[in-house]
Length: 236
Image 1: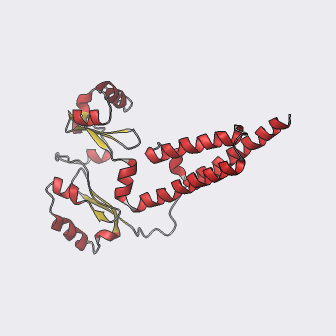
Image 2: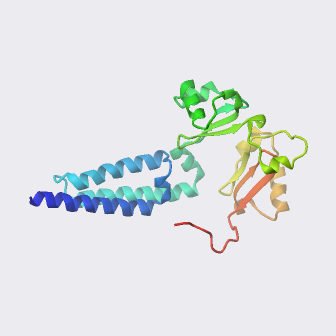
Image 3: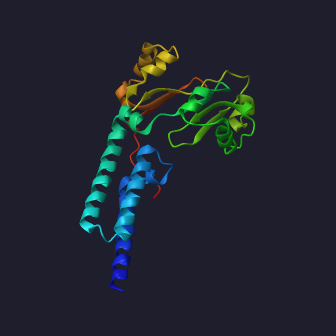
């Protein structure tokens, strides 16, 4: 009977500890997980289960293990925010599966996907005809992002005010975390000096920019590190 009380106490303790750890690691643990978050969840779940039911393992050993993995995951997540190359190595990068309406078979094989799986992912986006797709990107969390061809896109109020038609371009990332993505510029024959002039026109340097992208309409979007928001909204 005493053993039952021990298991009860350990189970409740394991639940509370994992709840605190999840709060510490942040809200991303509740979203669609990438490689790092998946590994962290599996390991912490296994340790938590042992903490609750495995009486052969000493509690102090389990606490040490939990602490090590929690702190490792926490500090690694902070490093990933700062270093983009490390983030790309650990989390991977999105893969273009359909470009310009054409299926990229090589990228399908690279991600161990079949056409049946691709069609399934498209149907989850309410797309039953692959001919409607202009671009499809497999994100690092395994979800598919789709950009339909212009003639199949939903009409918005803004579209009704437009006159004539313009050629769409795929959004192109220019700056991320203060670093100019020279590879994207070179791949799209965009002059480095052009981007520097755009920054100079705004009295900004690359280091001041958190994220910059050239939209599908050709317009530039800049998000600066200093947004000037005194009290940002965070719904709890």
